[in-house]
Amino acid sequence: MAYETATPDPSTFNRGEMMPSRLRAIAFDLDAASLSSLREALPEWKIEVVNGATAASLTRDWNPGAADLLVVKALEDVAETLKLCRFLVSRGIVSTAAGEEVAKTQGQPTDRQDQARRAGAPLLVLVPSKHGPFVKAALAAGADSCLVLPAHAKEMATMLARVRQGNQPGRHTLNLDRAQSEDSWRDDGGQG
Amino acid sequence: MNSSIGSPLKIEQTGKVKIITFTGGKARDIENMIARELEGQTDGLGECHLLLDFTNVEYLSSVELGTLIGLHKRMKGSGGRLSLFNLTAQVFEIFAVTRLQTLLGICREEAAIPATSSLN
Image 1 (cartoon, rainbow over the protein chains, first blue to last red):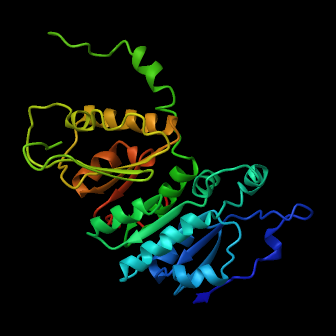
Image 2: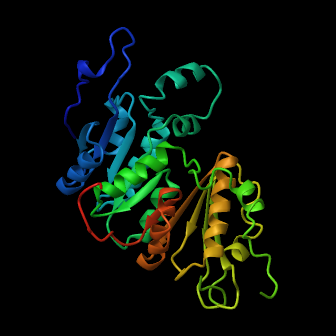
């Protein structure tokens, strides 16, 4: 397993607080084009690349720390990729931004997967085109979203923005019920 | 949405993940097939991750888009999540032109057309 920039950069920590100030993504087995797109989509982020990792190899010695995005490129061995997805979700990798919030909840009886989901660290899986069954399996394994290869920077940025917002309604849908009830142009049917 | 007549609605549930595959076939006289097929299937899902498989869906009406937005809102309100997947390019385009892909979790079936590598 190859791990680039595995050592935390001291410059990314605030003095005193020792909390990461720079958002961090961990990318598994990304090809050059996908990695380039990811870097374009997340120009200010620290992106760490892990190659050749499996769920089995990571369980033994992997300590990822906090991360704000996990990106996994599907391998030919689909089952292994799904195992990795399940492992990453079950590992409960928390967002650097949410670390403090999660720390407050520690000690309370919470489901680890739910805790990770609330805290961030969305999991994005990159899949080859026309791999519908795999997309379904990856989402069922806990992936937040799947992008079809080649994944473009804009798609990645859009996906990440949506997931990090926690799927919150936008300004057009924030008060959807009220808007619909007050819509004087609403067609109630009948002949015109 | 083209629907019914074909295979019945497929529903799978494992833990907190529920997968609904819409049916195939044609029944164009029904205005909101999405709502009809989801009827009774999305109540009390709580923090469930609901996955909607659009493999058999060839088009969507605006009414059906409204149904999906409402479902998204309900899922979010209950602490759950909604993801749409296996969308054809044609169906994805409907979400793209309405910019609903920025609101809903959507995984398409085919790669995007590389119109530009820029973010803007």
